[in-house]
Length: 145
Image 1: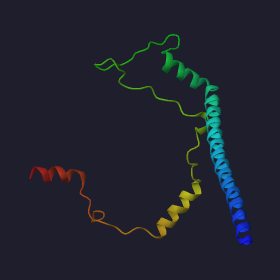
Image 2: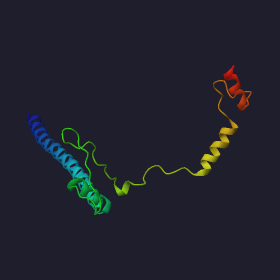
Image 3: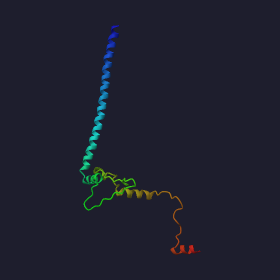
Image 4: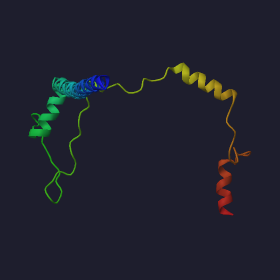
């Protein structure tokens, strides 16, 4: 009987410890998720700060937000029947992303591709090229007849 009581006390003490451990792990995971979200938010704010360092972006924001124009320019805004702008202003891209498109292929890749194509041409579909070419004057004569 005594062994059963000791075993029950141990199970209860370990169960409460296990429950506390699991609760703490849940809290740690939630805090790590919050930290990751805040780091992403900080990254977005730093990117926005970097964009404000670009004079073209500042100029675009001044035009868009306040309707500023450069000296000597005349501003026109096209409105629909409700008085709303017909077309929104285009946005400038992030300076860090300009030119980050695919890198062009080297010229020798295209040249080698044409060599491979010449060695194994695709099958012809359709009638193919004409076997006879009519002289330029003959078309006019055939239309008259």
